[in-house]
Length: 229
Image (cartoon, rainbow, N blue to C red; front, side, top):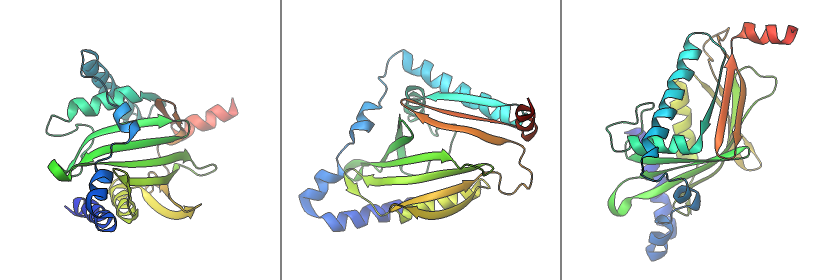
């Protein structure tokens, strides 16, 4: 409930600030990336959805079994998965906050966008976030997440509700979060396996490319062996 109230409050502030018919037009604006990321409802969409789900299961199994891992997730497959799952009671792989549905991703070189429908009826709008993400050099399992924009339709939103949501969600997964600002943008440093003095897996690749994202990691011993070789 707290997550929903934070987002609702952010949208309400935008409503008050813009007002009237202008607000309605701005709120109902659908970003181009969100429209373009939709996967057509045809015979291929369930196949793409299943492949995305299978790759996710393989990834978690490899990590859980202490194996080196590397997976590529294609934008269309991710979007097909969430569109297929949107008509069901949950999205399967993740727990969605109340009121959030129809998630879509778009990946570019070194940056990404995520959008989703929030609410229903007249209050329904597309919430979108543009971000950059990268592995922090010379830090173990630390990922930097830079928030470039946060909008409801075409209306800019205050970022505090988003920062609170990221912090709360990350800490529930034993991920430490430290915030700072870079060129006016909030940046989160996410320390994975922060509760483990000796992490059992090391992130070694996190790369956003046009239409896809690649993640890879290995056990600490595998990294040392690779360096010696």
